[in-house]
Amino acid sequence: MTALPDGTRIRRVEDHGNRLMVIQPPHRTDCIPEPPAPVERQGDVQWYVPYTNVHPATVEAAPADAVWVDVSTSTDAYFAALYDIWAAGDTFALLEHDVVCRPDVIRELEECPEPWCLYGYADICHRECMDAWRNALGCTRFRAELIQAVPDAVASIPAGWREWTNLCDRLGERLRAAGFTHHFHEPWVGHRRMMGLSAN
Image (cartoon, rainbow, N blue to C red; front, side):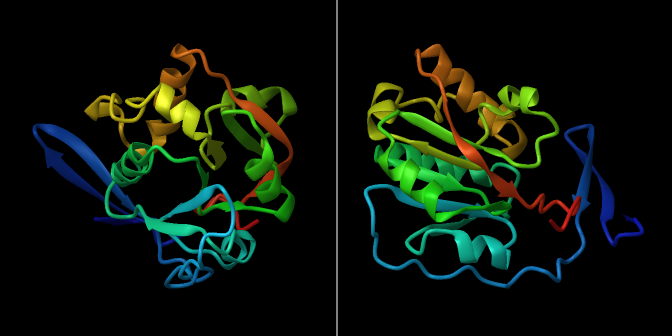
């Protein structure tokens, strides 16, 4: 095992003849140990917060009725959670653990009639780059009619593409192939970059 200056530990694992690097970030001191328990659902949209870390700023800004889903157990855990959420067939919104929401975001995603809505990240380098993030799941809402039109959009993602780094684009490809497109909302949301790149 190798340790980097920031405390990140890296170990090499042999997996079916392939070398796999397991990277374990340092323990975060700016996070809290447990997410809050959700209150009774308050709106028409069920909110979910997939998390590996629980940051106080995300907790404070998330809808009080959000269901926090631990996806820290594997690189495919986010897929498994999204698979179950999608299979339920109900309108839902995702707010990832490194995104800081606002009351107007919650209101707009609850009220907008478009089937697929999302907010871009305020830390994107240039406005022109935003379209590269059109499949982002960080602050996204899907209406039930879209899910019912493409019920296998998540289930059809092949096993080799289910890790969290690929999940948004694989889902986006399937929705676009079915004739759907994203609807951006502004102003963009805060993005904490909880992978240790920034504390902002």
